[in-house]
Image 1 (cartoon, helix red, strand yellow):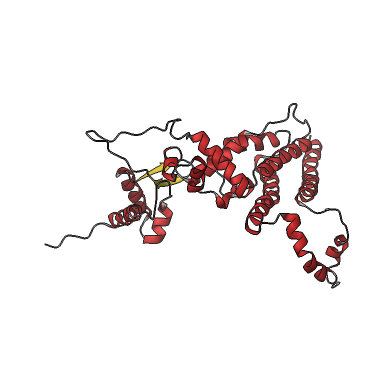
Image 2 (cartoon, one colour):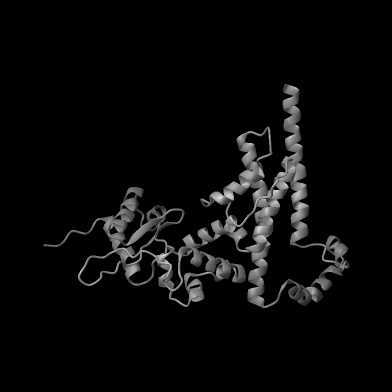
Length: 317
């Protein structure tokens, strides 16, 4: 008698299992989310949920908070007994969760986030990448831990500035210096898909703590507008680091090679704004000047908003 076809969820489970068995998906890699499963296989959300539930029950995947569902590390069964969970130990080739995170930060600071991989971090310890999976689930979790660790290094000024504008400026500069030390961090953080990072949230709370008279929606818009400005400007740190890795030239060397090309463009007379600063030998336009100029103008605009609200409240009183 012909065997009945397996249900849709089972076929999807078997497909993902084959990807794991063949090494297409390795321990720590994210498996398709429920949304991705519905799109790729054209099934209902309930079926997609059952797929991930079955994979977890069969020990193939595990859920990592803030990351998603990832391939689980294979369980090894010792002779004469049932499989036992192997707990991470500090003595495993010098590995620990903290040391792996520190090594990841070191690699990303020097080479950029694109260069970061589990294999690259493992090379710092002289071990295989599989050894890292005892301590972190995969690259996604590692980068999240790295970002959280970076914010741990921030020391809030004491005493804190009293004025709201001074406090916001101080908070923006704390972020700016952090992104300067860790060029990859600004491009990792997202306004639209924020990661659960209490230390980063605490810095933003501190930055906005002296703003008064704003409703919650306006206040969060002010906070995220400031954050977005610092992030977008600081993204240039990572861009420059990656460009130096690719070309072997720092910014000054690269600009020197481009000077004849730009001279030809600027002397055409078609770009008077650019030509106006081309003869100034001093480096008057750089990431630092853009940050300071933009921060001042941004706070000027917010001052108009804050003072307007305060005046309105006084009139109403």
